[in-house]
Length: 71
Image (cartoon, rainbow, N blue to C red; front, side, top):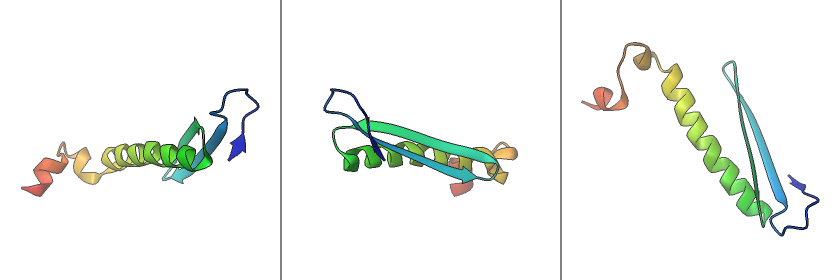
């Protein structure tokens, strides 16, 4: 977390980096409060993690998707 040196009130920055099986997932968000910046960065990382899991899933290598697995 850091405070950006802008005159804008949305100057609170949160950066999160996660290392996951040979890939680095990173999110940087800026908003009016540190709490909001962290929430936004976490939501962006959730999306990245979901995509990473789908991409690296053994079922995905077989051409299956989540709907196929549920049936």
